[in-house]
Structures are given as structure tokens and as C-alpha cells.
Image (cartoon, rainbow, N blue to C red; front, side, top):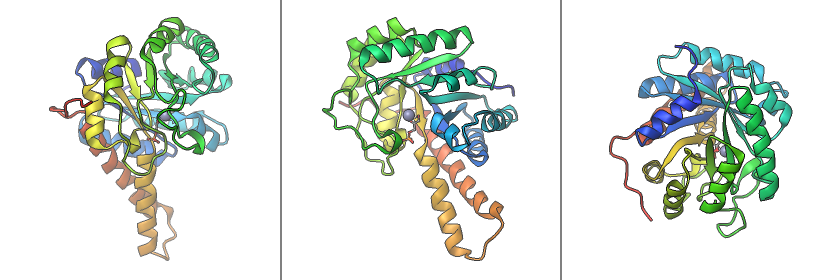
Length: 291
Ligand code: G3H
Ligand code: ZN
């Protein structure tokens, strides 16, 4: 099936009061596992490549993007390609024509006015080039090895009226909101501010995105979807699954040499993680929102 578009997948999920899962990929095994896991769940999915993943790939976005696009093209379910956490304008410009239908432009580390002005310019360029745009207001902590933000730190929570103005003035299509999750958590212990999510959902008329979802327990994820989150970004959970399975395999097979043996174990573990998480986001009877 041809590459799907992020805009359509997010809109369809929002209309059903569900969320589409967006998984961060680093290797071809990640992409294959996400596609296989989504096929097993019978659900659409988004493959996303972060600026950090591009840095890991020697600064080149196209090799992984083209591999992911090919993996998407042979999938039995709709799969879209998204460029994630872009802070560099040259990378933003590389998104056009590389198979991406959307981009997350991340200027959330900047003061409000600078975030707005940079995001407005990025969104205008992206729209002229046919890309759906997500931005972030309030900062979801834990990026690039930083510790999670204290709940009371400035910017640790997205303020609804400020967010309304930001969306209107920047022209973005979706907003990543800071409601208590943090990037790169290796335990699922985050607790979300569902009251704030309800106020954001009632104030904003664009889809809301949850980042740092690996650290959010299933019940909290389901409640966030009930509360209006339409796109759920997941990265670390895949790496936990992959690395754990490879570690186990190599511990049991100390003489292993063929990388396919342990990469297969890692990929299989990621497939299971993807299928399970998509199941949480698409549950027919999601957990009611809690305050
Ligand atoms: O944009 C990517 C996500 O926010 C991934 O966060 O690695 O903590 O799941 P995570
Ligand atoms: Zn993120």
C-alpha cells in the first residue's frame, strides 16, 4: 500500500477518539518491527525519524528515510513517515521529497516569543512544501539526556490560553503538550495531569500529541487517549525491548557471531512491544479520564 499521510492518520484517530502510535526508528530493524507490529494489531502507524537519529546516521536522513518508506510501501496497513524533533532548518528542508508527510519542529527550548517566531516561519515553509506540522509548547523534559523537568519548573506544563494563541499565531496543525510525561524514561511511572489535558482539549482545536510515552503506564495512556490525545510518540520502549532481548540472547549464546541471530531476537521483541502498545491506544473501551 502506498505511503499514508500523517494528517489523515491523525485525523482518523481523533475522529474515533483513539490515538495513532508514532514510533521512533533508528535502524531498519526498528522500521521492520514497527510495520510487523502494526500489521499484527491491524492498525495504522507512523514511523518517525528524529533529528538525533539522523545525527547517528552520519547526519544523513535519506538512507533511513528511504528504507522506512520502502518498508511502509509493502505493509498491509497504512504507514506514514514523520520527521521528529527538528531544530535545524537544513534538516527541515531535507524533509521535502524524502518521503515524509509531516514534521515536528521543536523550538520549545526557546522563550515563548522566539519559539513562536521560529515555529511560524517553519510552519509556513512546511505548508508551502506540503508537510503537516507539529510543534511543542511547554517543554516535555528529558531530551538529550537532560533530567525530567520538575512539575513546577517554568514550562513544565502547557498553559491552555497561551497554547491557543500559539496555535493561532503559528499556524501549526498539531501541538505536543507538556502534561507530565518526560522523554527517555526506562520505567513506566509517569503520572499525567488529566485535568490540564481536559482544559487543553477544550481550548484547542488541533490534535494533541503526547511525547515521552515510554514512561507512561497503560492505564494512563488509555486515559490520555480518552482525554483527547490523538498521536502518541514512543521511542525508548523499543530500545528497551531490543537491547534487553539482544542482551539475553548474547548471554545465552556467548559464541554467537552472525548479527542476524541477535538482531532477530531484538526485532521480535520490538514487534511484541509495538503490538501491545497499539492495543492500548485503540482499546474499544478505554479507561475513563481521571483527575
Ligand atoms: O518524539 C519522540 C518521543 O517523545 C519518544 O519519547 O523515547 O520517551 O518514548 P520516549
Ligand atoms: Zn518527543
